[in-house]
Image (cartoon, rainbow, N blue to C red; front, side, top):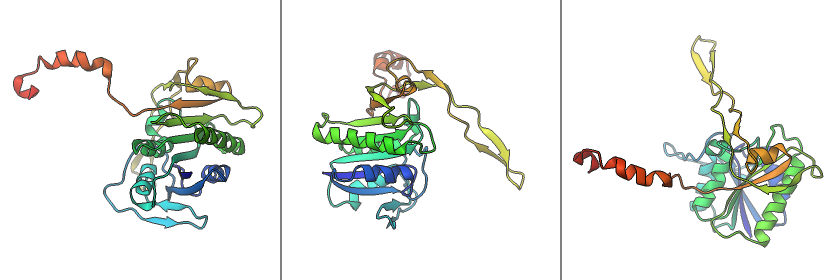
Amino acid sequence: MHILVSNDDGYSAPGLEALVKALDGLGRITVVAPETNCSGASNSLTLNRPLWVRTASNGFHCVSGTPSDCVHVALTGLLGERPDLVVSGINNGANMGDDTLYSGTVAAATEGYLFGIPSIAFSLVQKGWEHLDAAAAIARSIVERQIEAPLRAPVLLNVNIPNRSLYDIKPARVTRLGRRHPSEPVVRTATPYGETVYWIGPSGTAADAAPGTDFHALAEGHVSITPLRVDLTHHEQIETIHGWTEQLEPCARA
């Protein structure tokens, strides 16, 4: 078993170190992670400059790019073989609902998934690393389960773990993604030189936290496991748009 581990908080993040330590003994582990924090990087690849890869003092490979860059470089040139599993995290903060579209943690796992490799993203819901040891133990148990009884491919799991002690965490629930309200307004400030700058505002509150969602499971103290896929096609609108396009001018249809 060869496990490729990445994250979006950077190669020196406590969550990454805890995850690697928790996976010890499950197989050969290779870590390829960003040089710096890339939270919110989503599935971006760096195409406007070359990437370098260096080996840090802890033995992890660090890349001057995004989480997707890390996994892409690892799978297409850095590693000498195809890994059996891609694991991302443990992230410092939740990746639920709409967060998954922006998350670098989920993006690293998604890159493995796009290459046909089973992939799992792990996140600790509240920032600050409280009960990180419990989250690492949960991550190990889920990886062990995937090794012992592999899910039918393709596999892309988004796992969120509450900040609780191991004995206080409730059993895992299989969930769907909830939804958030729109983000809060940007925060406008000024530089010392009088230039106006903007900070992205906080995430919106939960708009859909009904039973069965990741928001609901975490609110009740459960681990949330959401199977994801990458198909953005709005299948229900295909027939409607077929009729709509029939009204276009011939040159536009062509």
